[in-house]
Length: 207
Image 1 (cartoon, rainbow, N blue to C red):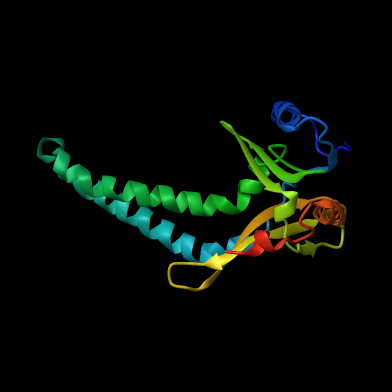
Image 2 (cartoon, rainbow, N blue to C red; image 1 turned 90 degrees about the vertical axis):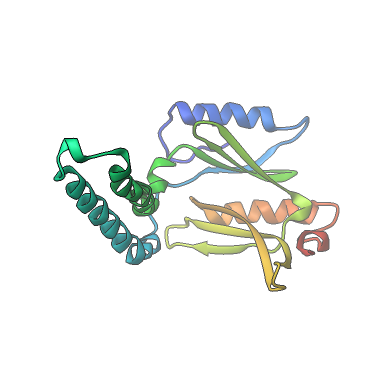
């Protein structure tokens, strides 16, 4: 397998070992790529909501804490502290929303995308190993977003169905951002064509 230009580390070594365990007898790797540590500017659009949310949560918690503390230690009971404590979960949610655009930086060397002659896999290593698999006979027509440097994203439709309200709903298998997204797309197209049901089988896109 060709390596992407990402420095080696313990997480990457663990992912390589995990991939070797996942491969079945005679299964070969057609393509693989490490997820890029790229911050998507579009993710910062969430700041329109998350910044006011976090500011309000911090203000509420701070004002409530100051109000309770100013009452004097002898007058403060557990019930009084419930007011500032009520704001802590909201501050935590705000911090999580503010950090979301930077998640790809943490994922550097921790997400491996693989195309074998039988399936597409996404292996993620954190506190535990997560493996998502898409069999070749369930691959639908890929949607590709490609940057000028050849990197990009792939979105593979897995199933089209209806939600509880009867609205059309599509499930996707997402890949990227990765280097040389065209090579990944070509490998996926090859295994989809070679699958028993053909590329983008009817069963893959039926509800």
